[in-house]
Amino acid sequence: MTARRLRASLKGWGGVGAMAVACLLTAVFVLLPLTRASGEGGAGVGGQGVAEGTQVRDETCDHPERKSPPASNDESGATIKAIKKRGYLSVGVDQNSYRWGYRDPNSTKKGSDLEGFDIDLAHRIADEILGKPNADVRFHAIPTNQRIEAIKSGQVDMVVRTMTITCKRLADVAFSDPYFRTGQQVLAPKKSGITGYDKSLAHKRICTAASSTAFDTLTADQKAGRLVASARMSEPVPNQLDCLVRLQLGQVDAVVTDGALAASQAAQDPTVELKGAAFTDEYYGVAMKLDAEDLVRRVNQVLVDYRRSGWQASYDNWLSPTLGKNSGPSKPPAS
Image (cartoon, rainbow, N blue to C red; front, side, top):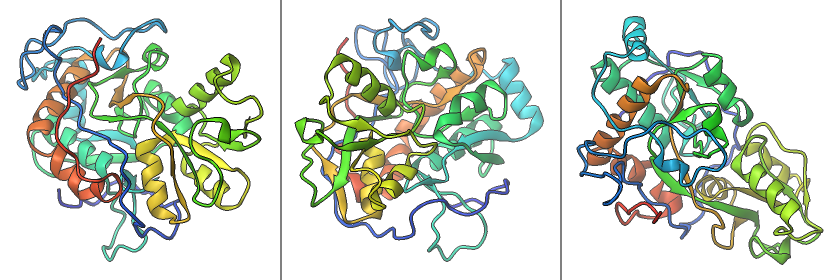
């Protein structure tokens, strides 16, 4: 996908300056199918026959990544009509997640272009909804802890920002079908004695971002005794990259975040690495307003199309240097 000039006045990339990729990491993160598996109403990549139902909005739901309404090309709904009349799509993104949504300070390009895997997806959604290539997208840099509020307040039409689909979040926003699979992992200095999400975290200071699934997981595990008792969670930060800065300054001993993001952070700093395997199973989705079901269905159809053509090229361009070559589509987890 060619780079496109932003129409928003974003300033400066808040990331870490050194961005050379140190090594290929072996964690497996794979393309999620954008239809349901056999027995759940799936009828192939065309998006037809997928499971009926609306977003589940209680904390007892199972497999929240499967609760999105079926894909549709219908553009007669009020939300999509308003976007078309306005002439542009407003999207909340990150501007400091390397290879996901960021501005390369070493780029020779002029202007304020954002680039990355999530940025490619946002452009594809805009192109299909507005019906033309290089459609107008207005990006808004949204901190991790303000993603939901940006949607609910109407600041943006959607958030495309490595946002995990959870039952808790379904009470506040609607999600598309998943477009990426990941899991929580530990990031720590190579020379540390930390080996993963285990007893090696004893007496260690752990950093997470506010309103992140990592923060929720660690809080729950701490209460349930699944996290070693002497481990200490530091004050959560607004943006995930702030944890890497704290790690570099010696203010914390480890970071817990999505493995996909941790891999990008390890690529920015060759002194740190992923420790141990992923200990959760999570799925990124595009977040939208609860009452924008027409937009959710249309985005799901965009994802069906994107899986056919576009997803793999974007993965190879942005993520294969840090996550390795993707082996191809995989089925969703068993119910």
